[in-house]
Length: 116
Image (cartoon, rainbow, N blue to C red; front, top):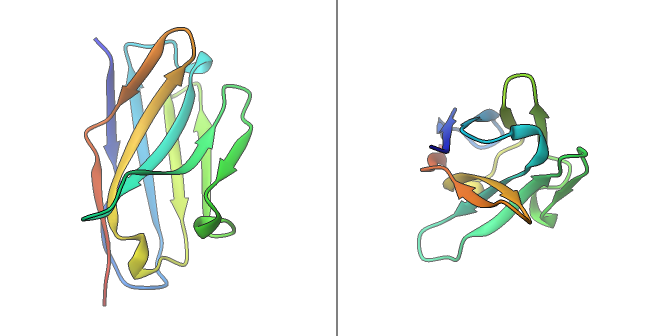
């Protein structure tokens, strides 16, 4: 059974930092691309950052220079380091594992709230 378990969300003041983690099980982690998506109230889910199995990364323009995605294949874990957080970063953040031949899986989400 595939499981993606996110952690690290919470309440932080503007300008602060958080690190999200997503631990995967039930998949061959190293052959999956991994992504972080977010969904704010009343908005569509959007891709925030993505890292391929070859560790190529991409980011949505609004987080470039502030967020960093990384992966540790030995720990089956993907991270999202979020710095200089803004109120507009407030959303539920979801982890996604994808492989063009084996399908896609989602975590349950973790809430990130940026507020003073």
